Length: 261
Image (cartoon, rainbow, N blue to C red; front, side, top):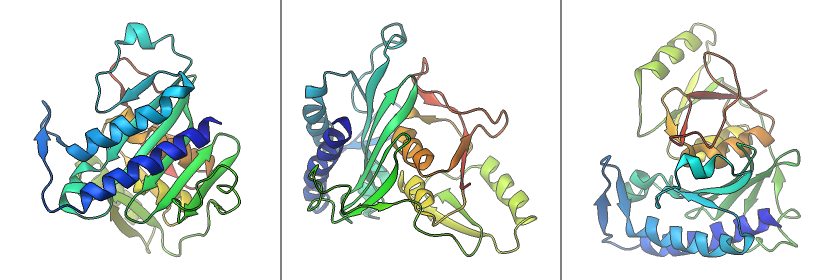
């Protein structure tokens, strides 16, 4: 089962990442766009690819050069991975980093797996089958156990209208939206978290809206979009209200809003 392959890949890579996270010194390099990459990113990338290889599906990863669009545009199904989403959080030791794996089919993510190594918590989803949270994931990640020990999402509702915002990437468009929301909701609360954890918190019911009004790489959001969607959240472009499309020529996701139904 493709979901189980992705879960095992996330757990295995998460163990390696956690071992490196606990080191005092970790090698950090910088890409052409000045974003950081660590030895943990590269180690996780290799482990995930090794686990996904038996599926015989193409893989797009943040840490490897993607095939040109002329090749990708004919793909019906492929993996999209971000070996460590939240590398800055990893470097700064905030614990808010995740392992992200998505299966994209017909240009939309239909399986999402997000693993939080520090907390040993796994969020996962199957299109039309729901989204789930699994605690002590390294213990209960066997295919026979994973659904039995998981909780279906969402788990609760917020008391205050809660807006998820990025801890590392503030932007003026989001600030303007928050001001508009404050005129509607007297009890508005801001919740700043890193990485794809924001998608997970909204899927769980701990937040009401997550606006991301600046473009992002598709691997940053594919798994989170799958999980939020399967939990019943609405996902749409802030201006056109259209759904997101993946496998774009430049692999950039359009701005979006994720909102609890």
